[in-house]
Image (cartoon, rainbow, N blue to C red; front, side, top):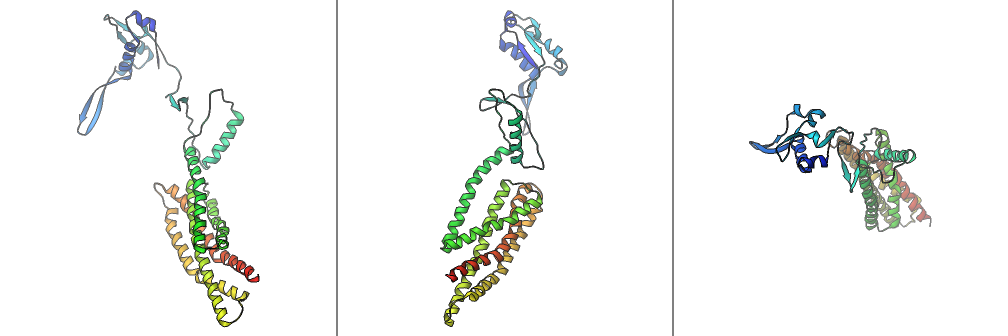
Length: 324
């Protein structure tokens, strides 16, 4: 509803813009004139003309306006009243007018949808000068989180490398753990695929947690392999013979077998603790399931990694040094 005040007509009756707007503001929009108190509750008392006086454009045009001389004139004598198409609300951001288009998607991730939508807009829409398009909502939050993850993930890897080096004091052993780490993440990727989960910030957090647990299990296995190798060396020296490949294989087998039960107990405890989150419901369950899924799937591949791959790589590494 547009009320376009005619300044010259209003001035002939001795009215200014504020006088006419005051009628429009109070008679049509309403004005709070008091407040009623009912116990702890407060309610405003709003005063305006009855609905039957203001429920059509014709009736609004007949609203009385009192001039300074005491005359009553209709509102249409000093203003044009008409219905126009327009936005339900004028919005601005960064000192620029803007309009919002709300989009709800399902069965797709936000990042892929926005990339395809941007490509379609670039191909099919030519914006006039002074216009621009911005993408907000969950996509904007996802972009902010992705920027943080781009910092957090490298820092996490650096911390893991530093802790491994401080523990082993040998870069070769650190590289064994890091080289097998991607294999530990394979199970998490497969479970995400089977559950039809898209990559998200929650999934990234789950992979970071999985990397920490997988490295921990790998470190435990590698430590016991070294201890078994050292004990076998000492036994061979006491027997007065040369350490050979059979001794190496025996030490690796003994070290790996001693860690089967502790590793299986650790993996079982972690999976048992995460399964209620995986199949739970309620507020926040959507996010929690995507954090737990990479860890549940990754623990299976991490177990195979620790029990099979790391001992085999340790054997190959020591065999090459033994040959030299």
